[in-house]
Image (cartoon, one colour):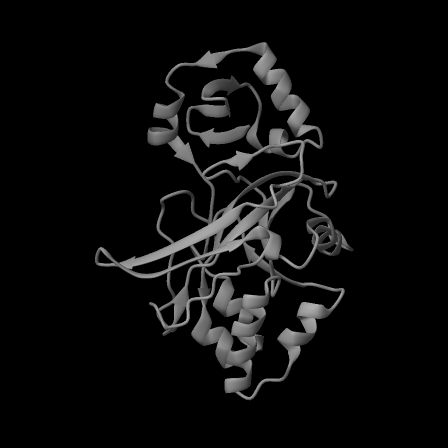
Amino acid sequence: MKLYRTSKGVLLEFEDTFYLVHSDWSDLINSDSLYQECESIIKGGEEIKNGKEWITDFLMKPIEGQEIWATGVTYFNSKMGRQEEAEATGGGDFYERVYHADRPELFFKSTAERAVGHQEKVAIRKDSTWDVPEPELTLCISPSGKIVGYTIGNDMSSRSIEGENPLYLPQAKTYDRSAAIGPCIFVTDKPFPSDAKIYLEISRDGQQVFEGSVGVDQIVRKFEDIVAYLYSHSTYPKGCFLMTGTGIVPIQPLR
């Protein structure tokens, strides 16, 4: 099942059929019983015949007042890429250590207002020389800390700034339009498919300059463990989204 936030209302898609949802977006996705509520909506059966048109013409980013957080160094490829950058600038082995540590790397990524939605433009800092998109499986988490859905996130990053000094991470990661999210929230009562893959293609002037893919089964941490650290000593009354890290690391500077 997929939930879409549009300017005409909330839509639920199931087996190519769309249903109108008479609920506030944040109230809906913050429910610990979101899957069961979606089942009830389908049984209620208010079908929308032009649902695809709503998504094409009226789609909004699937976030209102939630915060977006991110976790890093969850893939081996990411660890190696960050480690090489750290060594080149005289850094230590902190990426190696956090990769194996019990405590994950967590950082604040974006407010809802600073984020953009599906097919909207992200931003690149003018004071950066190497910038990459980071496509990531993103968790939708309720205020109680329960994972209720999944979406797609882009943790747009300045590799040149982060590589210069790890203390510059907030500047490399957090700025206006540095996060993209959507188009929808995937709701399931089963664990996220372990055979799912994330794909990235970068094009310049119509020419492909990079492509890559990675399986989400390469993430070394359990989602529930990351969420537990995120919610430790912090409350999220409106829920939050958590980007789970990138395993696709472009090997050349791509602005």
